[in-house]
Length: 351
Image (cartoon, rainbow, N blue to C red; front, side, top):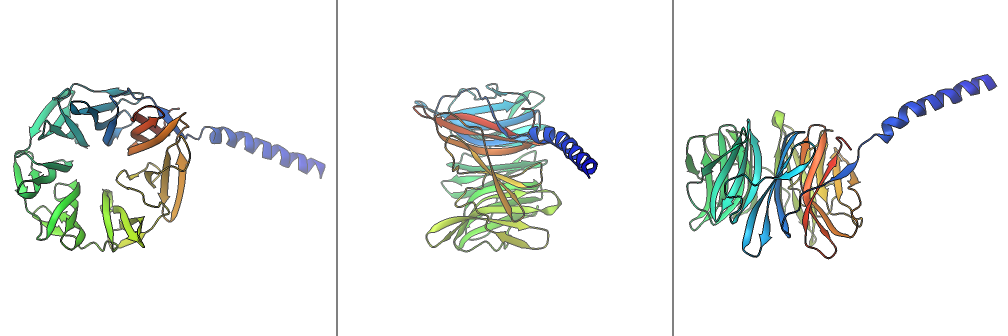
């Protein structure tokens, strides 16, 4: 009996020795240094092509107005890029996306809209066909791009087919487009404010139509995440008894399914599909000096935290992107006695 007990103890110790290093090596969120900008700053977007290339956009608030802000991740460090046209001139940078071998970003250049395109280290500009009062959002895929906003005549949907621009019409009753995204040149989605409430529109290569998505009552839409195999996820807020709660709607190719994860009133614009197959998004933190992220896998919601930042009043990741087997965040952090500046964190990857 004692011999059997000794064998069991040895097996347990062997298993512990083999498992413990893997557990100890399990990566968590780590802080990444970001070269400082002129605070306060606003982060617009983050997009990644692979573990060695990601871009973050935004703008600085200076005494002379807004100045565009662009940062590049090279796999090991963040560096500020000031080589793009208009880098030192008034304006801001918005949505950034990868289109084939190029990086595209929406640029408000002293009030004039354009798309910046970067390929093989060189920059090119695509001017918009008209000046808008508001440049609300931008989407690009191979063979097509859209810019939505308003001018003095109302809502505008500007469409680029690779050679020129056209203005697209929307269904009657659409008052405003809050955002737009696309999977292909003939499959784009937009979330709209209409005279009967929020609605989802869809472009089929010929025209924009009401997609007839059964949005929750008394709700709005923050974002639409389009994925391969036809999957789509809508995130937004629903107002119930005077307070807001986050909802998610998923399309599985046949029907919409609505859920209400325990996220409170969370803005879902930064939601991404992580390398583990779950949905990830930053949420309001319940711990001092630390960021907080939610992971949604089916009906299960779990949370993780970024590293502690001494004297931080607010740690606010604003955008997430998948970089291979890692997640990358970019946002702002306000340290006591200073104005918000830039922060970045990574889940996974090299420590």
